Image 1 (cartoon, rainbow, N blue to C red):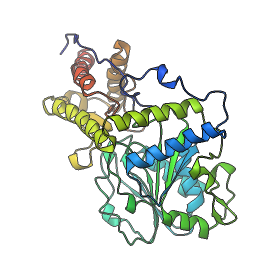
Image 2 (image 1 turned 60 degrees about the horizontal axis):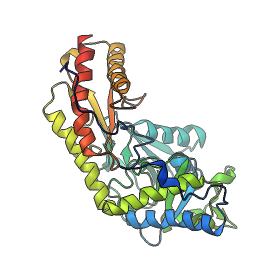
Image 3 (image 1 turned 120 degrees about the vertical axis):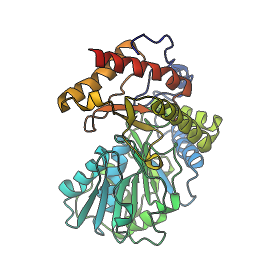
Length: 384
């Protein structure tokens, strides 16, 4: 297809993070933000608590789980958990994309845990979940943001496990069902599925995780930002809206706007339905298109948020690795130049391809409008 398509997406924002704002968002949504006010004021704390409680309700989190707003996005939340909880038991970390690889690096090279095992799989696949040893603490992503591979369910996690299940769920929370009783630590950021602003993370702890915090002291120093106990007991303050450091009240207001929108579209079920509908648009297009396929071949493990596409055209596959990378970047750049799709190149460590965010804040109609542009950009690249 070399003819320039006529219809453009109303929103070209298909980045996998920070992700698209909710439909209809504007700066007016932040008019009531408590700028210039202390987050420790009565009003400021009330809004922080509201973020926590609305999040708990939408996600269906068990009542005995603690939830806190923490610094440094999902990365900060995961590292708080790793530095505070690990070392009491042997550890396993699952890595099938770049973020899992990052947690493996933290565990093996930074914390230098002696009894740590890394279960790896290449992009597009999951490690053998049946091989996981639950006598150990287990660290894993639920949805591989850079590979498009998701864990389909929690059946592989035993209820009577000895170790903790530590789950980075940043591109899965608010888009997929999470089996809360099987997860002891769950983290995410505001900048993903609800399209919030960056730098703030969420950390959920099960009673088993709290018990670990109160019964185990790591042998390494803990920075102030990582400390979750006082006098050997859980410090309840961060889980009641007293954040460890100063949050942006603009970002807090934006998070509340996203949560209220999520409630209006039907809560978690509505958010999941929107994401699944978006994935279906791309699935239908891939099924009728010869040059493109999914990086994840198994539909059961294919993400509905961070959808990763690969080039399957024999012409493309016959090119050198350098040429393939240049072609893939050229397709993404052409679409960005036209203003129809921003930031859809595959992640820098992933195979050459495209990565299109299909979370709930993206409209299916925009994806429908995008697909002819994808055909157009690839046809131009091939003809060049």
